[in-house]
Length: 476
Image (tube, rainbow, N blue to C red; front, side):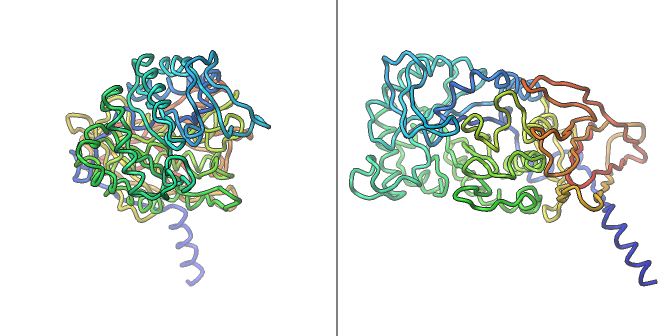
């Protein structure tokens, strides 16, 4: 009997069964979804290079076709605070590096930089230099951006000022703190707004709380701010720091991590400003070993939806040095595993998705979401089993029985995102697929077929099974 009990317990573990009632209208806690919720950040110096990659326009267009609006693009990062605008420079950027894998310690850029940015389809945010304390130079650059770019959405002045050393020129020899930063942001915004407009993206912090800026920058400067930006990386790969894929992709951990930003989003919205995770990805310093994996793609899905639920209007996933960027979604003749997660969550939200809700309790490996139309009708369900599977042992399965459907009988369709395991990497030949055989070629063009699988409906209910480290969309 004891042995039988152990066997039964093992079977229950391998096939966890869950019952969830689907609300007929969005439940409390449901959140509105921006059409450009899934957006992209590109490192400042690398941006012109990205415009030369065959995959850039196609990867962005794939996401746009699923949401009915192009992803927004933020051009900025560490090197925006190393950049000086040269109105006479013929090339878009000019710099020297010892290796193509390096980022420059200084660079100049010219008017054609903004010409390239003007060709992007969606909203574009431009990051300009504040650390070097040359306001006239940044104003000249901003003026050229405004003149050249019909798609200009916002302007940042400085990147992650919480990391500026006290020796930075912007500190003016007086030391550096958040209060000092808020003072200089306010003075720069109010000085430049008469020329550029009320177009600024405030804060741009990695570690400081954005609420402090919103509540203390003053009414005159606050009027010039269009959006509030917080940077977010759940893990660090800097200086040899270790990363952990099970921790990154675990649903309960994502719920807990993202919740830290809820009060900041609320404060921004209370001030009439959009709240963005204006630069984000899986781990700092390029991402480390966890970032090019299929598990990171599953993290993208859950992280995007959780961020929306706490009030984030857009997430800008950062793309760094071409050829030296573990967390990038695409690169030189390559599309990486995390991009599949961006595509899958965009498919789930769709063109018609207006509000999203979490249907699980946020405490286990199983994530369950519903997306609703503008008329409050449930459109699609998403089940993500974040249990970590590394390809060894037996792969567990979770089954979910959905009740309360408007359809009493018949068949619904489902689409599956899967891979051999959580560590699978497309760039190493692993078969990451959507709908059985749907993949992306090296230039981000869709290949294969994204097929659906039938799901029987009986008694206004259906049941689906999702293996560990896998996700499924059910089309209602």
